[in-house]
Length: 241
Image 1 (cartoon, one colour):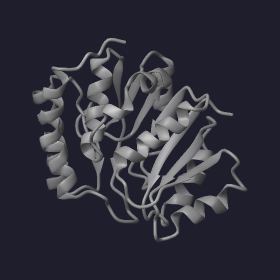
Image 2 (cartoon, helix red, strand yellow):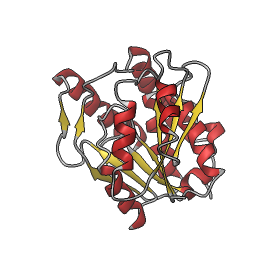
Image 3 (cartoon, one colour):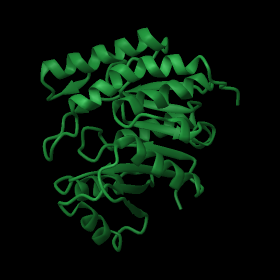
Image 4 (cartoon, one colour):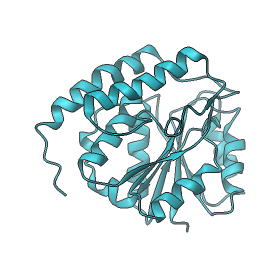
């Protein structure tokens, strides 16, 4: 059994899922994978199950319907905490996150980080194949989060991360309210409020070439309004460990 688990939520990722699984299992460090599939009608889950005979360290949890990114990760976190993993990762299925960078994120946590973030903006703007409008929206969203919350994170909406186990054991998952981009912000904000050491590791983010993006105006609106709500709520919470 590996000490490192990569959680990958999926919804209609049949074009990418086998390739991303094979890539992760080809890395020099031994990672396990947990797929959280939200009832993909395109057969994503079946592709994963067909690969399980070849890869014993490939796991899948199937959910009924599209329940949201945040709830998928929380499901995966709870699954991981029931087992002995020390390093627990979030990663997309579409190769926008380079699996090679899993090793860098793990090394950051081995060397003292409690939460390592794969950051697009910690060294300039490292985004490939995004239209300029989306680059600007993402960049200024992170600036907005820094202004409202006071946290010094350059890439507040990043979804490529490695947690030390103790972070996920400390954060009360039932108090994490958001499901889209705001989920990523809320987890970083909460980890910092609890006093954990959060570091950003520079990566290059490449937009998907296959499959369909799950971004929507509803998700963006949740993040915009949710940041203010999250900050206000934090005034009334106790973050003692």
